[in-house]
Image (cartoon, rainbow, N blue to C red):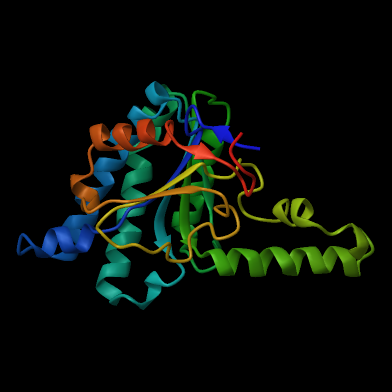
Length: 238
């Protein structure tokens, strides 16, 4: 059955182009990441006015460890700084924050800040910000299948009851609806291992704008355009 979407309740964003933005200005790549972090606040604040209840952002992938040690260490410091700096505003603005991804490889001090932010915002209901940190879609599904297999092995779950809905309950995103719209900035037209399972029926927007230049106005334009799309989920228009 066709569905004419009215609003994108869940938008996921691949925030690409920070490094290139800095290099185009003859500056270190980390400068671009700092500029990109500032842009997050503007997009978060724009969400409630356009009916976006859930925003999921791709902050650091399981593949990003391949970058230079200097850049990775700088990003980890940036994540800590972001959490410390933004916590009170997120609380004041009614934003609930949760993280997805494998925390095993992250520093204990960063994980503690993540836990504290999740707890501090746990009662907020205006909107939901999910941050994918050390996240990869294949890694997520692999970890989910391992947990599911263990439960089958322990007799907590029968293999005959395993279906897509059950598996979804083992994913990092079990508390989220599937994304309606996925946006990638910087001109790249690929999904880079982001929300592979969840985005099966998402609409996509690939834009040339580098993330530090991606304004709330452009975000609102893309969300509004989504509202004009017809979503058929494999069916036909009626």
